[in-house]
Image 1: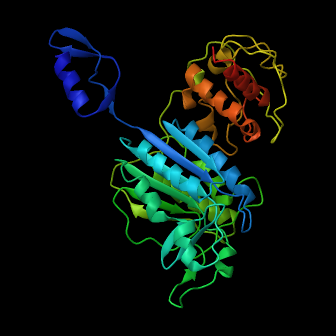
Image 2 (image 1 turned 90 degrees about the vertical axis):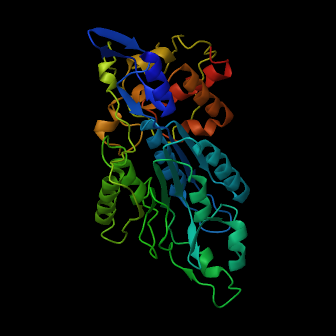
Length: 397
């Protein structure tokens, strides 16, 4: 019986949990259960282009991308690839590599914050090194939206592109026209033809501009953080709430818009997860927020082991090991500003599925680029990130 179930479940490519299957008067323990869920692999590519070399810079683009990248990690995506300030060569390479990751996935998302433009009805993402002196340069120096769509076409259930790219771009006004028939419109152009199960979300309606925002994030990204990760909320309803929020907060100057269609089944980007409060047997520690942009200049000497007590500067976590912090302590503020309480109170270990291997990989990211340590606030403070980096430098033992 179990062998037949195993073969069936492997055939339809499902994940499984161990369960007990009734069989007449007997009960049969099977490694592949009658209780199962469909395979659900989710990947996301997040790009923030703000340090433009030939046109106006967008300070919030990097902040927006960092926030959305953290959001997808909270939503337990299997892969979250966050990139910043990409030139044309790096952008092409990034899309190529991500296309490989999309293979055998159910949901693939690309988020882009930066400059975008429309030429003759074709939408383009603008790399940070684009000069765009003539309209004929656009095809060589920018990446078309069609190219991005092809990157995620292998996803089985949902292909989703989010463009916070309708900011006013001075390059479109200074660009020389090579032919009178070429048209360059404000904002991005509407999309008439999309494959099924594909959504493209604009920060602003076609032909209009999106605001970069006066705070740390754009109005659009702020609303995405608030609604996109709500457990069980269909992505279409989430985007509808995002639209209403942006209209309200911009006094109707900016209206987000969504192109494409999905079937009748509900699709939520956020996985359902058990609250970490159910897993923690020790009292929850109250943690204080760290200051934004706090420099990572703390040193602990040698952080040699995962279970080694560390002399943190914050009294709430002093003399706790990295292992203890992942399993015994819950944050009391969100890892992403504006994240709804019912999302972040699940706790980091449940949302991120952190373990020793994944934390080691994150520590190596910090070691390679220490500036990443202060890019986002962390519920455990800057000293935690520094400790993770030092532990990774010592071999993640």
